[in-house]
Length: 175
Image (cartoon, rainbow, N blue to C red):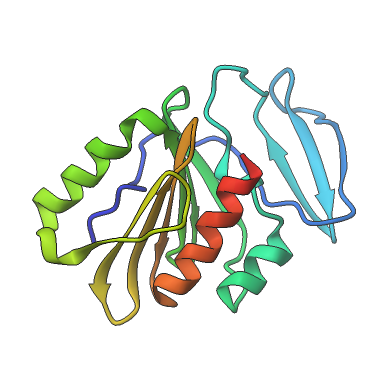
């Protein structure tokens, strides 16, 4: 499946902390890194870069994301080929969350239309500044929504447009 969320080559640590979290300096991690502990799970996050796009693994608490998806996607793995432009969060279940600079939205949509054809991309109103659902069949696809500063992408191995829209709206609200 072609994905505006895509896969990147460089990986850094990421996590998905739920409610009741504790954040501390990470022993043995890179300078400026933090360790977050929530509900028995510990993740180490890379140092915060003020110029970096927000990490999608941190936008929605794990229990909330599991509720939206109807199942626990497991831990997310954060990656960024160019963290000043785009970051993704990949889950073993095939769910991918992405955050990218808003001014790249039209280019991403054009690439998807060129690669998969006009018929697979459907405009969706009422979400962010603009939004589309790319249907790849059998409830699979990706929901992409543009906010003011960033656009978000939600790639789903199942669950359909409604689930993608709920997750995208939550991501936009968190930005």
